[in-house]
Length: 234
Image (cartoon, rainbow, N blue to C red; front, side, top):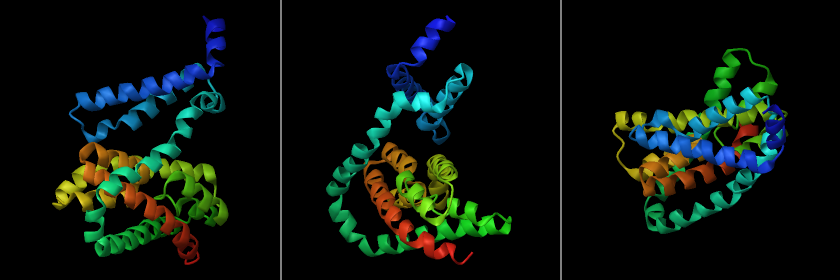
């Protein structure tokens, strides 16, 4: 069995299949739970894959070699977010000014809050630079972190934790705040929790998903501009 596993572990198709299977299991658990936020399918899939890699002693590089096709599809999937946004274009025009204000406030707050907390705990400048772009989507956040002298690996972890936290907590928080407008609900989670939050928004309502995609894209652009400026204050 050891020899068989050693052979299979080197085959790219194995890890692609494992990734898809883990996500399908996560989706099944998510539906069985009544779509509760804590049963986030992405989080469940990540836990399952991490346990599998740990048990089998498989290096991440070996896993990623097989699962990189899923990584490649992130690009086309992001572009496809333009389709529901186009369908909701009249709603975007109607709320243009509130969206701009919410974008600026959300982006600035997301950056300043983590920098202030990090500074209060005495974290070095390198770690602050790594955390500053945490609310942007991973590709942008890692690029900004590198330009600021941060650690791309730490930034990737912060982005993941931010997205997962947002996706899990957004529904109960917005319900408690009494926010019922799907445009506001979606846009806020897109700004705060990028792709994970956008995926959660689409699970709840198509309009929320469309506005989450808009918030994710605009916040990525604004974070790339604001993060270097705000980091100088610390």
